[in-house]
Image (tube, rainbow over all chains, first blue to last red; front, top):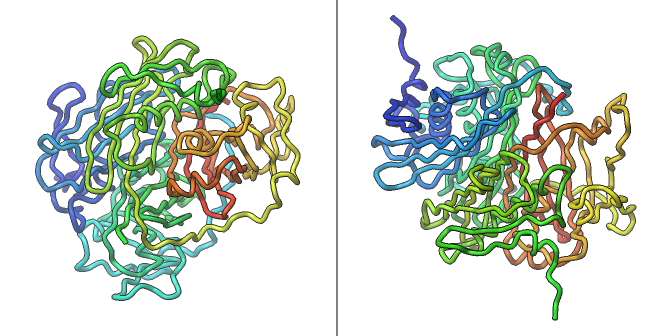
Length: 271
Length: 271
């Protein structure tokens, strides 16, 4: 008998019709208010990856968070817009009762061998075990579901904002806790496992949240499977914070030195 | 009597019902196959900005291109999912006949004064007039609708791929041709005015196209209006090219040294 990983429980769906799914976020990945965005993204992706009409593998997806997802049951409706020669286009809506809580678009594609090139440079870092494990006891449940080992820019919350501000760029080794072999679903969640840049630079907890997140899967299914349970090197930075919004962009690097995924999000903050 | 700018003609819509719009891409911004993605994005944004239910200004949008848009009439359906205290969420579908040609999600928001900070550094460049105007005569119509002045990484197409490869990063001054005062719509189009990184690094024209593009508007409406017709500094790079897909990410800098928009796209290529 095998135990189900809490991640798989959190993103589980029951099919109630073609393109119709039901689920419950549970509490294993809960955030201060509502469910962790990473498991919401993975749940939406799960609805497409579980669909018999699926063609290929996800290459890009955008998830928009309309409101914090409560602990009640939810429904997901998927619409398959088009299966072309190269790509397949989906849009999704997640509701609780009459309320839309999240929307998403997902593009899948079959992939074959082509020209290959990586202009980006992996940061020069030591192995994960050489960096301290971030203490996550007592904080939000979702944070305890990851092991964070910061190479630079660790999260150190204070009661007053940093003066001067800290850098917005952070580099960290991240892995699922407990360990779980990497797949497209956990990679989708890892893409949202970055703390908000606002918290890093100001050093304070403030009313803020991701509004929309976009992830591009650059690795092939083989590369994702080959990563296994090894930590991923997660790099993030932000460009600009102004009048209620800031962006942040990221890279997820595999142990082989290849980028698995990149993406960006836009974050709302109140003050 | 004033002449209508070709951009405004290209993105014009007629309302046929609540959230129902009709248009025609015309040819002023046509690409090798179909319409330029930038005007498709701006057209979709136009459907939301023209809607009486609009609340606030666009802060992020994702457009997915299912197929090249033909020169025939098209329809746009918008769905308003939610108007919350801080954000408003829309999803859109663009069809020609029975075929979905593009989908999109757009988030709008009211913006007020908050903490402001820009960790990103503007590249050190000279004024636009010090760089040569890219010769665009005889190429796709949309390219002739912009003035490109490359600071680095200009597009130089050859019959054989570059060996060694050229850098993926480019810096260029870009402006509408003829000049047109900047607004959210033209900023949306400018966000897609980057040549594919594949063309820059290999130096060849190959079967390739944007599959999905996401843009975050970081500037306020006042900052966008203040830009007027001045050229924008456009910076782009790519992380990884592998098995039919590559990403590319961008910054659009205003003359004031502030970032107006950032974003990323994923590009399909055949070989």
